[in-house]
Image (cartoon, rainbow, N blue to C red; front, side, top):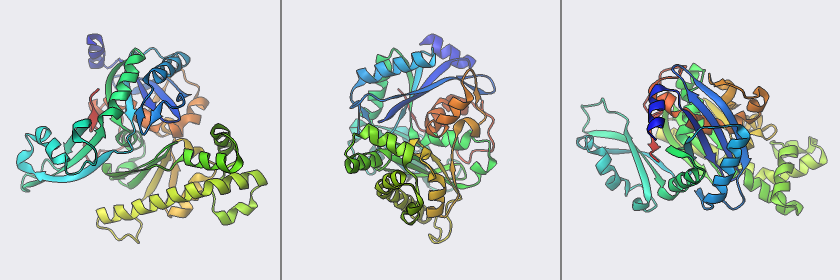
Length: 394
């Protein structure tokens, strides 16, 4: 561990960032040098069946074995790791607290958190950050409160340790995505616009609303790619793996009235997947309305400048134009390997590009130390320190 701390100080330590998802495990090995971040290996492998349950790694041994095999396949040799936590019960909210508590905030936050957390506070990890520390004239301060169930974090730490890795931190998906899509963006508009970061994964669709580089609120819904897979499997009497392959090869995101122009099988698969996609779209629209109320804006006026779309389902044919048409705002499918200034060494560019939409969060996880130390070429000035918080110590 001492050598790991020394190499961190020197800025030469290799770290492997790992996203253990319900469908796949994604990994990126990086080294943070003096002025840039370099990816030295990346890869993905299927998550062992039954290993994940409601965001918790329930079969640590099989996940550890899968991580070990993945690292060997990637040619990764890092011995320290970071994990990404996706918790469907995540609480991330702005609260008001007396400014007199600022010096003792980390002691008093757990008492305050009981009012906002629907799960057992004694079985959770809580982080906080003062958002308006310079406003000394106000006797109230705005605090970002983030809480994650302990078992979500601990199960990942245990899996990494079983894979003979030294866990150095665990971060939540929403803030890792912000780091990749905003703080590591080469587009200055990322710090000026109101954005919806939407990751449509396998089990969950995660939304993060961001205004001028500052976190506003998250939303997680249990409707995503696997919802479509189950519907296709049931309707066509095939197993879920076949259904997933069929969706990836044949499904087209489009309005029902436009499906008549599709060939027979794409039309059939698209019709089956449509209800889940429509429900995801409705949830996004509801989130836009809620954002307008949070920002005291007219819900009938455009509140979002752009949607940045990622996740495995972002590879669905025509999903960007479909969502753009339904939401009435520009939708950009993100590719973290082309949209950031990250250097990729010894990795096939075509291979990296193919996984770009699915790797944004895990790359954001890997960028944590570079962002904290200022060793990244920002396209703009962050509107807050939210890129630095919250990270849950392993």
